[in-house]
Amino acid sequence: MPTTQSAHNNLKAACLTSGGLDSIALLFLLVKQYKSIYPIYIKTNLNFEEAEIYYLKKFIAACQNKSIQPLTILNLDSRDLYTNHWSINHVNIPDYTSLDDSVYLPGRNIILLSKSAIWCALNDVNDIALGHLQGNPFPDASQKFIDKLADAFSIGLNCKLAIIRPFVNLSKAKVIKLAKNAPLNLSFSCIDPQLSEDKIFIHCGNCHKCAERIKAFNEASITDLTIYAKSH
Image (cartoon, rainbow, N blue to C red):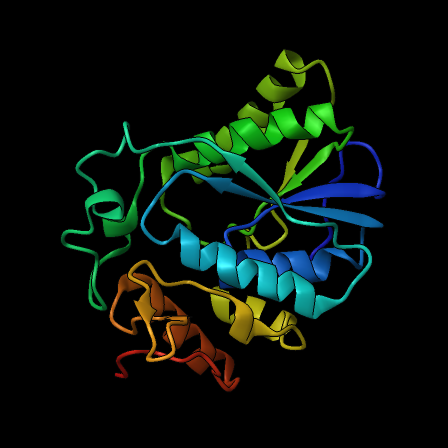
């Protein structure tokens, strides 16, 4: 895995994780560089979060790695911000052929990182790891912004914090290859979760995120064990 630029030491890091491919791959691989990894999920009450948390807990349990600490779930309700957004009202969810801009949530990284940074300051953790990939087009994912945000957090919280992004020069397919030994079938990337006949969350197979996932597994030439409600 690409090396991180730690703010303090390689003993502890927080991993901001949604349970999707990129963040669970990062969680899985960080154990090579840190003695303790603290997975953090920020619950903002979007439509797909129940499914993400369900699989994230299963993934952490399946890893059986003592370096990965119990999941921390922090609440920060965003429904008053994204009132008419598809992630709240479940209308016009970006489909298989939609562009990246269609899944944009303004300020999403600001929301997630702000509460994570405060948790880190209160728990003596100096590094926050994100699974951002190469070519992320959104303004709050630019390196300039991330660097300035880390500086602002360090000043405002009176502790040295670093925001590390080991995958920032990698594609999703390359990340899958790096984490091929992880239980990737227990990651969850779908923004329109469906229920199987036995009432288990499964990927819809028709949304923008499912399209990214399917394409990445194909490019990586690794068998995709994901169950999709619809196949393409």
